[in-house]
Length: 161
Image (cartoon, rainbow, N blue to C red; front, side, top):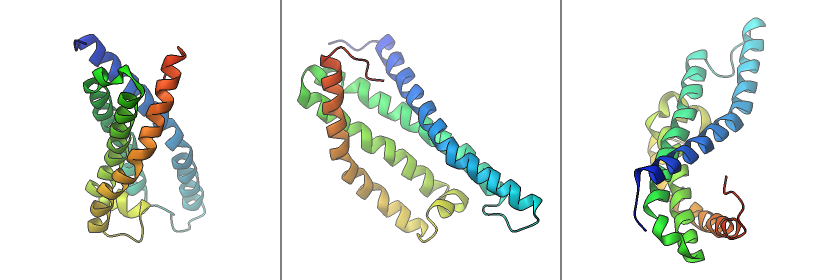
């Protein structure tokens, strides 16, 4: 199977659609956090999260999902020839899932102060860096299972996204 720019572009677009979806899901709790901060500010009480930190979070979360989308879509593109059977789909899923969650973990580690420290209150920057490979390894089997599910959907002619 030959690789084409059109295929790569299609994979990137699918990945970015997924990133937009994840951003909308994350927007719900982040929006609630903003409302809580606004109510606390109007009540002249201490903020749950300082406004500068809140702004950093609402920028960093979509950025980490966009990075994850590009990296995972690139992995999907490269592993495209493997997806002729269920094993290839499982391997693709097992590769893509750690990439996505590793990108989010990377955001938490790189932007530890203020973003990572806000989400992971009782962890140091070093502990956050150490958690990334562990979490990636633990989530790879889940990605493999999702890959098998994607194979089943593909065989049935159903859209993957």
